[in-house]
Image (cartoon, rainbow, N blue to C red; front, side, top):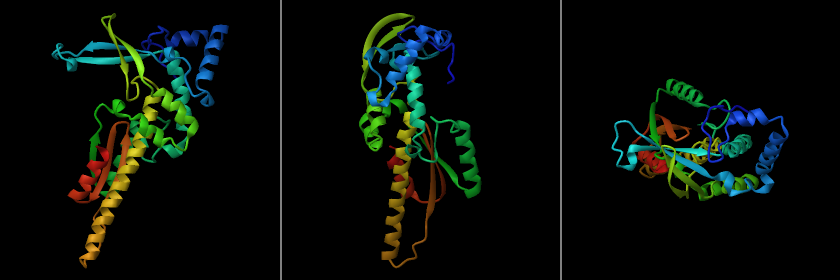
Length: 268
C-alpha cells in the first residue's frame, strides 16, 4: 500500500514515516490490529470518533481579498491512522465492480485521469462526435449521505460502513499554527481521505446511469411523437457519457436542444 512519507499529519500528529518505522514493532502491531478492527465491515466501521477528527488549515490565496472567505484556501488534515483505514476500505469498495459504471474513472487502479482522457479521445475519433462537459462545483461537499445509502442498498456491509464514514465530523480551524475556532462538517465526504475519490466515483457512477436513463427517455418520447405524426422515427443523436471524479463528459453525435436539456437536468 503506497503512502507519502511527507504528507502533513492530522490532529494526532502522526506521519506516515512513523507508521512505517514502527510497523514491525509491538506498537506497530497494536496499531495494525486497531486498523484491522476499524475496517472489519461486520463491526460497522471506525470505532471512536476521535479517529475521525480533523484540522482545517486556512491558507492565504495570493492576490485575493483576505477579508473575505474566498480569499482563503481551506486544507483539511486527517488523522494518519484513520487514513490508513480509509485506504483499506477504498480497496474493498473498488472490488465491488458492479458499483462502478464502465466509463466512470478514478478511485480504482488502472482507472486514472490518463485512462479517462485516452478513452474519451478514442471515442471522439471513432464517432466523430463533440465533447460535451459539465463540472460539479464543490464536488465532495455535494455528496449526499442519503443517496449513498440508496446506492449501496444491495451492499449492506458497505452501506453501514460508509454511512458511519459520512457521519458529521468535528474539526478545529487553524491559521499560522494557531487555533482560531472549531466547527462540524455535516455533509459531503472529507477531502484528503483516500476513500473519498473512490466513494465519489461510485456516487458519480449512479449519476452517469441517471444521465443515460434521462437521455433514453428523451429519445423514446421524441420517437413516439414522430410516429404519432406519421413520420419516420429515426434516431436523432447519441450521447456516450464518461466521468472522472467531479467531471461529467459526453461524446455527442448529432442530437438536439432537448437532448442537451436532458443531460443538463441529469447532471444538476
